[in-house]
Length: 140
Image: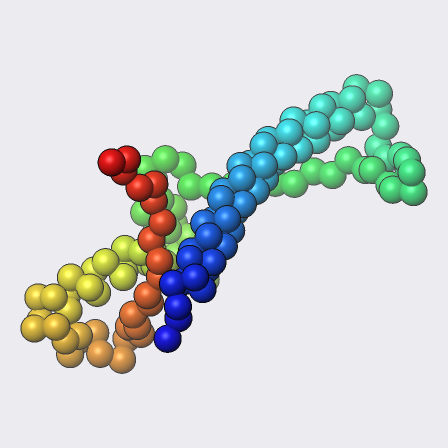
């Protein structure tokens, strides 16, 4: 059994860690934005000066081209059908959002007298996870 002092120490540490995580996530977001901007600027400078690569401080910098593709807006089903028709169906991966699946399974359990419906039995793993919610207290 934890005493109050130990519990409060853990609560303080949990809040501290969550605050630190939030700050670091914001820093990472800012760094990624700046990284993209500097990468674009350097690539532009190298292209304009016709410099394919160079070495600075023991690091080689070289231009690379990468081709990226994504499904056209609202045409994903057509793309999938075309890929399958041309024999490239192996590129297609169906996924289910984990949070949506969890909410759905919770709803199904509630509607089935607190038990997992037979048709889902063995198809999903269900477990309970207890965590501590942290929010600002209201002032009194």
